[in-house]
Image (cartoon, rainbow, N blue to C red; front, side, top):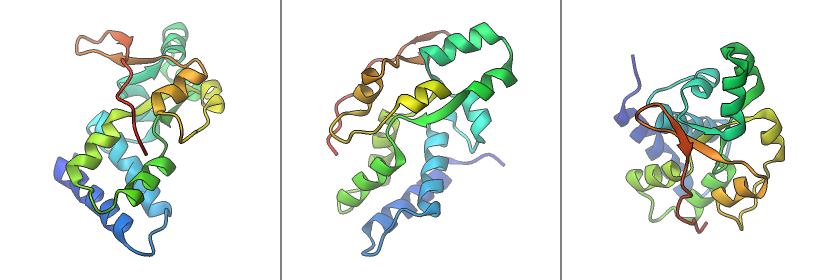
Length: 166
């Protein structure tokens, strides 16, 4: 049975309630809930990692060029990974700081601004999180251009999102 929007809303509500609790920690339940939510936001389903790599509408230019060059789905999937442009650790910190004003819709909008991006394993090694920089800058700092699949199936450069203050 496919995952529904109301199921995602319940998972976000869980994260909000945990962020609001006095003894909140980022454990495996929190991390996994974030992964399920962010996967759903880009793939509209509860998908496994390799499936997400294939269907994700956001890729680095290098990951896309590699896909075109290899023409072999399995080999390509072995060379790429899903990367949270807005790292889960940072998203959780933001939720804890904003705990009194969080809404389900607000969390969705916040997470949609910087989606999961398929990058090469080499690019992934270069990425470091710097809370002083917005997620788009984090990618620009190491020369990663993000492409977005259009409705027609073409891949075009993704426009930078609005600055984040977290």
